[in-house]
Every structure is written in C-alpha cells, then in structure tokens.
Length: 320
Image (cartoon, rainbow, N blue to C red; front, top):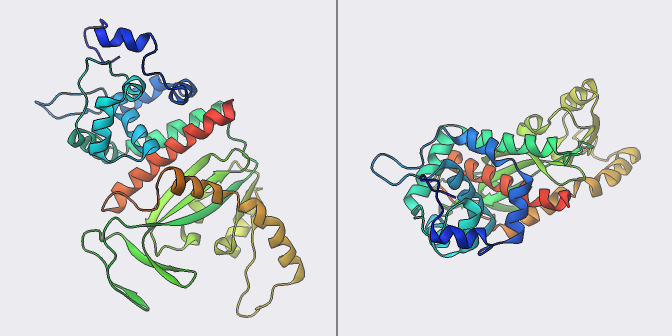
C-alpha cells in the first residue's frame, strides 16, 4: 500500500481482508514482476514540488487501468476515488488520497519525455518472453487506421488539408474512401497473439515503409499481405534464415499472378488474418477507433500503453 509510515490504516485492513478484490486484476498482478517495473520508473516523480507525490508504480498501474476501461483522465481520477478494486490494484488504501487528472496527465507526459513508455513496453515484452509465452513460430504484420482526435478537415482528391490542432495526423485512402488520422502497425506473435512490436505513424505512411522495423529476427517466419511485398525484403529474410510468408501482388509487367503465387497467397491469407483479431479487440474492447491526443508523440505513448495492457490480459489467458 502507498504508506510512507509503513503502518496500515483502517482502510488498508479492509483491502487486505479482500474488500475490492477483482479476480482478473489479481491474475494480472501475478503474471508480472512489478518490482522490475518499479525500478524502471523509479527515476520519475509523479508530481512537481509542492504537490502530493504518488509512487511512479502507482501511476503506471493507473495508466494501465485507463487503457483497460477506456477512461479519460478525469474519469480515471473519479474511478480511483470510488472503485475499491482500482485502489487495490494500484496499491492505494481507502484512506489514501488519489491523483487528480492533471497529475495523471503530467505523469504520462513525463513517461514519454524520458522514453520510459518504450522501456516499459520492452520490459513487459521481455518478461512475457521469459515466461515462455512468446512462441516465435512466426510474426504476423499488419496495420490499422485510427481516426485523429482533431476534427477532420475538408478533403480534395489528391491533396488533403490538415487540421492545425494536430499537424501530425494525415490522410490516406482505404477501399476508395478517405480517412484522416494515424496508422497503428503491429507485429503479432503467431499462436500466442501477443504483440511484440508496435509503431504509430501518420495515416499516409505505407505499411512497407515500417515493415523491417516490425521484424524481430528470432521468429521462424514472417507473414504479411501484399502491401509488404518487396524484393529486397524477401532477400533479407532469406539471408537471416527466416521463412518468407509475404503474399505476392501483381505488377505492371505481370498483371496476372502465376498459378503457384495465387495458390501461395491462398495458403498464407488465413494465417496472416489472425492479426485482425487483435485489431478487433483494440476497437471493440478498448475503443481504439480514435486516438486520444493531438500529436504523434503523445499518441504513440498511448499505443504503447494500450499494447502493454492488451498483452497483460492476453498473458493471463495463456498462463492459465
């Protein structure tokens, strides 16, 4: 519990006796070494001079709750004040104060400014790997469009105006329709469904531009749709001893694919499509159809926290 005196208050006794227990959060608490997380973020101060400070680990856990339950900063503040199971998970007794929405926002910014959002992502991924949950049979690459928080500006064919509130968001077209926002690129572990890498870009960025950064190097194979096809990429995979399972696409000098390439695409498609379940969970369970913030950097931090939250929930299923 968050007590500098080392003594339990009246509220702590109730928490220790099981009040506010949540089975899913208890299972998540047991799947991760939180002491390692605490050491990683211990350099941060959760509040500036003159404000009540909260241990960085309390704040990290609060940000994970925010992802799982789709809460804004003000709603997270309210939930930490009212929900016993929230307080129990983050490590606050009933008699402890709770961080307000501005403290939550500042901590998230501090996490990003110190590059600790990336470090947290890496630490959790490493722990799940050590537990044997990452199978490494293959990496499934794909991307999904996420709408900007800023209002959509007017669009003209061939050129898209930008909203100055978020200069990093941009336009793309999918299925003949224009979309304004960002693109979340992920590398999903085949079989486990855990996300091993995640990158956020403006929506106009082509999947192939970031594909090499999604390949870890220890997987047996790499799966991707036609957007990831590139001759040099295929050669690099072969040189590294990684099976090339990227689908073929037609070219100007070869408008119709040979039969063997069509057959190969048909075999790859259902395996690669498993990544769509991840995006489905993002959008249905986490509400990740629109980013929360107004810059690439801030929204990249959100994506990393979202992926950590997703992986922890996935991990308790795999560990069971």
